[in-house]
Length: 415
Image (tube, rainbow, N blue to C red; front, side):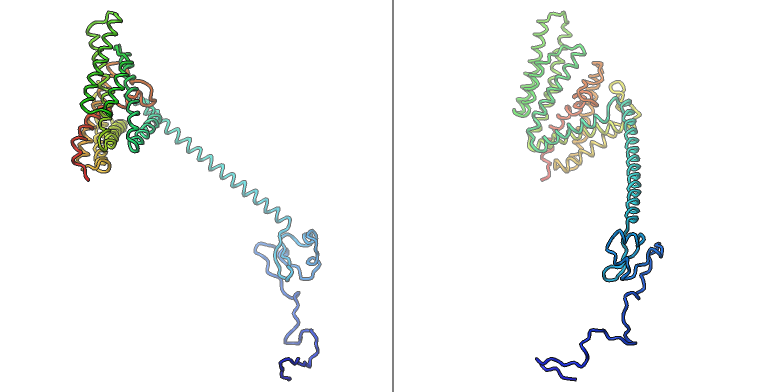
């Protein structure tokens, strides 16, 4: 053999022929001798056999001709000779049909699930309405409306006390004016002569004095307000000349003074408490305890009430309900004292039991007043609750012990 030298071409003895070497050891490779790929499971053998390379079908450039020559789902060779499966028109039709069936089944399942959900919701609504109707027949209250109104009023009250406590002042004034008007109308319906206009004028002055004036001045304003409504009533009686007896006139004067003390002055006490350092927390605490006690008494009496507490005054109040109110008010008092007022736990017990007693006495007192007037509710302004004073009957008397306890227990504040 010639040794190649750089730059010198190599001289070869064999002819420059590109014919591959063939002998017994290296036979010539023929693509047509490759066996076909096995058929897929579930596919007929006739449909899975590929066409040989170079066959007329493989050389046909027309898709319509290939589909006519090849059965549906046949494996066809590509340019490299490898067989692969192509989908025909029947395959696409079968897939579309299966998709329509599957979509129909899915729509049927969705419709069935929707019908079941609507059935469950309707059943739950019927049960709730039946329970609400039973509660309404037993207590005379619409539970759903009462809860919605209570939650809305509580949210407004909570927002005013937690963010800007001065916002509580117009709320207190509005509540006092509405309560004064409501009580005056109820007393007039019971045969008492109560003048609404002087009551509202004097009441507004008494309420505002609780926050913007000194404590001693509030008592002076209260005395002046009661004298104002009393003189107005006596002058009005003198002008009327309707033959009313002295006893009835004196009763009218006393009732007018009672209106000023019961609604405007007790509301002003809440503003006195609000004006103190961290007073908004004390106002919020005693309102929460009074509401919790009232709610727990209602729920416990509804569930377990069997023994009337004061059948002549309020037949629906039971000792079982009072027991639930005791537990709830004590628990609420302890939690509020520890986490809100920063007081020892025993201060919470004192606060809880004091507000419970004042709230219960206030509730029974208003029930006695309504029974004396021959009415069930002070008004119908609040659906599910009755009148405004029907919700404030336990809160207004609780302002007195709340203010007293804030003065006594503040030195025990945990720093």
